Length: 160
Image 1 (tube, rainbow, N blue to C red):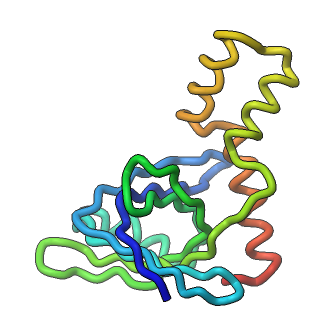
Image 2 (cartoon, helix red, strand yellow; image 1 turned 180 degrees about the vertical axis):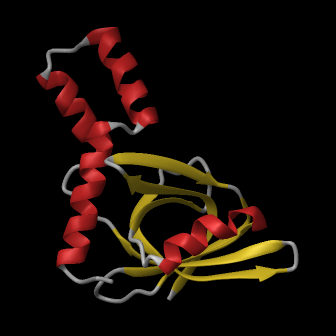
Image 3 (cartoon, one colour; image 1 turned 60 degrees about the vertical axis):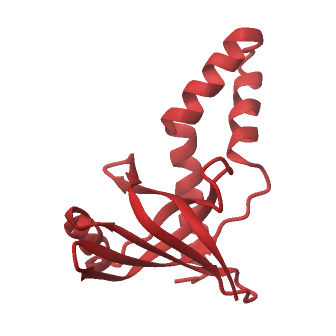
């Protein structure tokens, strides 16, 4: 196993065909590559206790979610995972959150998918850059489709 510092954590949830992005403030974090053939990881964070209801609800529903984690430095591009809440426990004034995760490996990165779509629509030059930045930040329909496909694939492969 290899462990790394978890620098940022973002959770994406689905409800009513709407993807919601949740930036999770971390006090401390660790991410562990279990180095097994299925590419399973453990993501552990010490987070605000006010998030108990949010994560407890996900745990009770056994909800699969998309998680993005920046490893080692906030400047690194985030890695994408499909995850489920395994433990959420109050420790002093914080919550211990433990996620069981499977890293997503895609043929195309999200950025490549966005760029291809914009180019296919005939957008170029300064307009291309402006639209690319907006879509990447908003993580709209294109991202939701990617997330839905990733989660569907993970469920079909019975990773959880």
